[in-house]
Every structure is written in C-alpha cells, then in structure tokens.
Amino acid sequence: MKLYYAPYTCSLSPHIVLRELGLPFELVRVDNKTKQMADGRDFRTINPKGYVAALELDDGQVLTEGPAIVQYLADLRPESGLAPRAGSWERVRLQEWLNFVTSEIHAGSAPLFNAALPGEAKSFFRKKLFKRFDFLQQTLDRQDYLTGTAFTVADAYLFTVLGWCKFFAIDLGPWPALPAYVQRIGARPAVRAALRAESQP
Image (cartoon, rainbow, N blue to C red):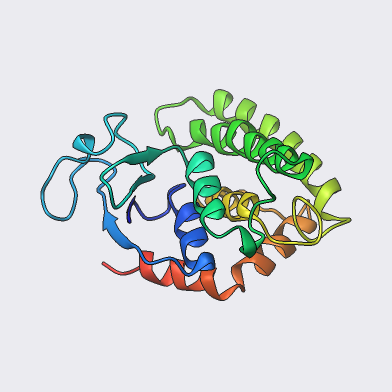
C-alpha cells in the first residue's frame, strides 16, 4: 500500500493507524501547494480532488477521505480493536465520532488557515469551534478516549486536527481535558513514529 501524505495535514490520521496496525506501507510525500509528488508527478493523477490523504492499494485502487481510509485499514486487522465490528452498534457510534470530527473540528478549523479571511470572520469561526471544544471537554473529562476506554481510529483523527491549534495560536488551557488527551495520544509509540517520519525532509 502507498499512503500519499503532506506534513501537518489530516493524512497524519491514517498514517498513525497504519503504524498502530503494523501494516506494510510506503509513504509518498505530496507538496500541498504545487500538488507535486517527490518524483515530480502531479498528485491529481492519483486523487483528482487534489488533497491528501489518499491510500493506493496493491491492486491499484485508490481510496480517499480520511474517515473512510481509517475504517478500511482497521477492518484489515479487526483483532486490533481500532474499530468495532462492522454492523455493530459500537461501530455506528465510532462513525458518529468520525463524522463529528470531520464536520465540526476539521471543517470548523479549515477557515482559520485562510490568511485572506477578515479578522471578524475568523473570530466567528473560532467561537463556533470553541463550542465544540466545550463538548469534547465534557466527554474527555469522564473518559480517556472518544468511544470510552480504548483508543480507536477516531482518536487518531481528533489528535491530528487538535494539533492544528498551535498554528492558530489557540490555547487549549480552558479545556484541560484536551491537552491531557493530546499528551496521552501523543505518547503512543505509533504516533511518535508517524510524527518522526513526517518531520523528515
């Protein structure tokens, strides 16, 4: 398998999951601005949408969209516990969290990357994001992980997008469960290995 990634983006989530599962894979770096890969090819030949992550399977099929990729990977090794059994109520709850992270935290953060956005608009998006942090605080104040007591693919995703707060000068201090959560996830060997690999030039 090949994972097409760009540092500091949502592709870190499937990267973490690949390492958690111990699956063999190749990392292919993509320049997010030029859409060029390390070998000079245009990434849009892999994913016409033009953004990471993309997972290329050994048979040449390409899967895009982080929440779909991480569930596919977890199902390759169901014994890992990174995702509950497909069709179970617990799996639906996991999908609920993945959808929350993608629509409320990931998409909610995205406008803050736009340097052209007026300060008033950014303030609006920050306030909306902070309401979602309030909800996460309530959840993670009573349990270690999004679905309860075990790390899942949803935690790999939330860890990834919470990591963007440093780019927006957002202090997570008002939500003490969140920095504790980030530290807990960040201490996992697979997470540390993924971060190290993505920091290489």
